[in-house]
Image 1 (cartoon, rainbow, N blue to C red):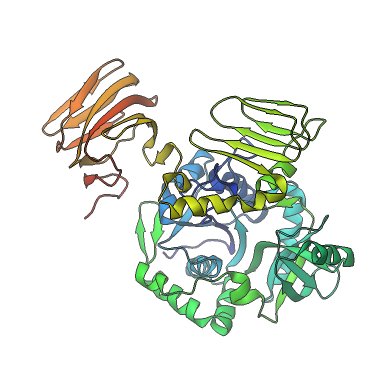
Image 2: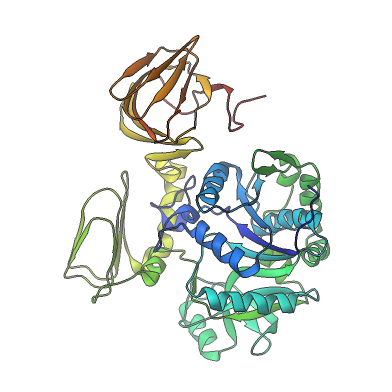
Length: 472
């Protein structure tokens, strides 16, 4: 882990679950991977913005389940960096500690610019100016955050009170207020929205943890000291990391530190944490309506309609958001849009898959989409990227029939290997050891028909896998 690099390290925190944007954002495909108001995902835009503002070596912290999505999205924009995996979710203070420990291994003068992967910032030039201001304030050891200059009372954000105007020491942090209190904050001019973005020296942050949250530092240091490199990923030791408190950087450090400072932020920021926030940053028609996908909106005002798989028509509505996916539809008054996460929790409690996955599920080799599901059968559409291959595996409870509809497939079944092209098919008996590979230069598309007593994704025994998912 020792190499000579510059002192600037953009750090992207990409471990969020994004449940407030259900049903489009789900735990296995959260909002940082979505394209909202852009042809690139929120993560990709954040990576580009961070590297433009600070240069240096990029560090991305994400959870185990999102590692291949993160790596693939970075590859799509030709971005290189280290991906540090959190074995369990422990909030932002431990996540930043891992990045700080890694950065210090590379440069003892490391300066971190810590950004969330799922925010929108409209003015990149102004953002660059603010980062430069923050770095200047942080060079002598200050812990700097960005306070968004509020243009309206907002009950969905925490607030920061500054001691003075301009770059200032922080007087105190405030929790999310009620509407009346939020109006008082904004009218006073002394309060900013808490953006959750930071700039500080890596050593300054670790020193603050040692003072204010030593248990977090101890757990993260132990976890990082036993880290291993796996493909493109840095894996820290799970048991040690799990011992850390589950705590945000604000609670752990920023609210307690005497050297915390705030830079006023005027670069068009939104954490797009709800559907009404997505509506606010979307392009609108003359009636205040915003739409994505196949939609028809008539005699309606201030609505947001997101159609994912079919025509969605809205008639005579005001201040309503409609979000349609292949398996779920959410209709909400925009005033209640912050509470969409309640459905994700209810679904998870009920053991329903709509909380976690879409009908299309992404894998490092491509994706699959459930077309039909019965008690003893399932039909999937499988897409394999050029040059990719699935693990060598078998199933205890199901047989499979593959039909190639586009591209070329190499199929291994026990001791046999065959090549299939368009309109050709093969049968894989229950218990057969098999593998699918795309040797071509275009995506391989096939239809898979499963039949058996149990069709769950956990009925997979892997023997070999190029993505490190097979047991040693």
